[in-house]
Length: 273
Image (cartoon, rainbow, N blue to C red; front, side, top):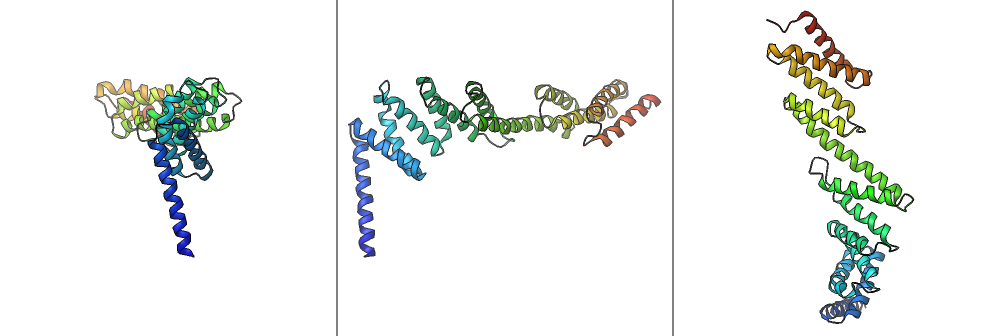
């Protein structure tokens, strides 16, 4: 009995595959559309990529024939969504963008715009790598938020924006901080200063202020004597900024120690010959 059951299942599977291959090789558009739609719906129901993969092959074949026709909107959306649900986010992003351009008044346009943006979010790498995809995702999500202020995905879009912004903030903070750790203090001061200006809402703002201050202090005390006084005064200004903004901050005690040393050096002129 078990052998018979296995045999029947094998025959059904073989028949199904044969039918798919027959339709795939056929020149008739109608059967391709019906089978692609059926496979797509099975993929949505079961969350199995094999159905999406087969449907996409058929959709890719018939899309040109349906462009400009009533079914074109449905075919274009299902094809894009099949790529999205199967995890091919690069292709999905491109196809959803094309959908929103081709069918701006579609009932699916909001969904397509969000999924296009989220596709870029899904391929956004860890903060230490290039963040061009993150920046693209951020821009796309902002378009969605601005366009659909009461949209279905409005709250989720804002959450994704916050995650991406934190990742981008950390990326550029680490770049600036790296100058400090490699003792390139002049470059560190400039990079951290630019970072503070460019990312005023960053969670790394206190750290940026402190490392800019510390870089200036270390640059000053390790400079040629003729440059020390001017650089100590500059470091003191940065120290005043940090201590004013973060009097009880993470680095407040260390910042105060540097500040006291700067004042002592300026008062006693220990930097002069």
